Length: 116
Image (cartoon, rainbow, N blue to C red; front, side, top):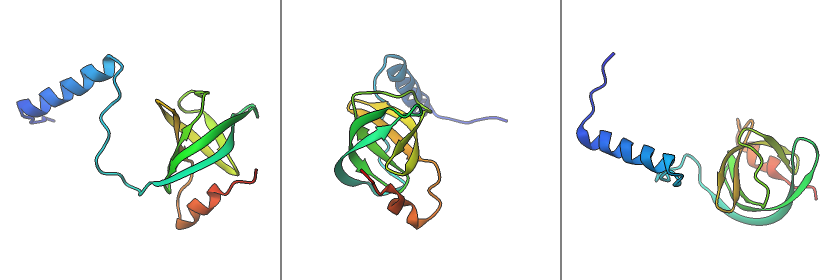
């Protein structure tokens, strides 16, 4: 198998890799799969051992959320928000991003109901 790429693509990939190695945030994608809704909701996130961590939902989509919180559970950790189990997929300046484990239907967003 052979890949044909031009110098511009190689340079772009090298710049991105260099930034990643230096600890810079990766470039944000301009096209998102889901619409994000700003949802400043204060709630509690529970880690796997049941510890409650105060947090605020920054924004949400059908598949996940961006959450402001002081704790930074490891990437891959399962956390619970309300009645919904989520997986930590990345860290950012204000906290974490989580992805819903099963967002297979349009009813997924209704499962983000909070019972606090």
